[in-house]
Length: 141
Image (cartoon, rainbow, N blue to C red; front, side, top):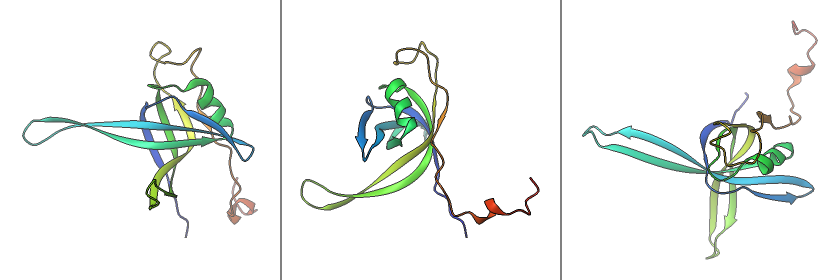
C-alpha cells in the first residue's frame, strides 16, 4: 500500500534564511510563521501563530538564497520529517521539520523585502521511486 507525507503552508519568513553547503549540496533553512485568526464563542478574537522549520535543498536553495528574506510571504509544499538531536543538557529531543519540495513567492514586488523581481514557482527535482507502474506498457498514455 502506498503512503504519503505532505504538508502545505502559507506564511511569512521569520528571519533571513541560513544557507550552507552540506555534502556538496546547498541547503537553505528558515522559520515560517503561519497565522490563524478565529473568534471564540464569547466574541473574543484570537490570533495564534505556529512556527515551522523549513529546509530546501539543491536548486530551490539557490532560489531561497536569492529571493527570500525576513517577512517574505511564501507558499510551501513539502513533507514532514522528524529529526533527533541532543539538547544542551544532553537529553534526546525530537524536532518536526518540513522538507520543502515546492516554493512560490507571494505578494507584490512592493511588499517584498527582496532585491529585484520575485521568482517563479520553484519545484524540487524528482527523486527516483520504486513505482513499477511507470514502466507498465499497458498504460493508455
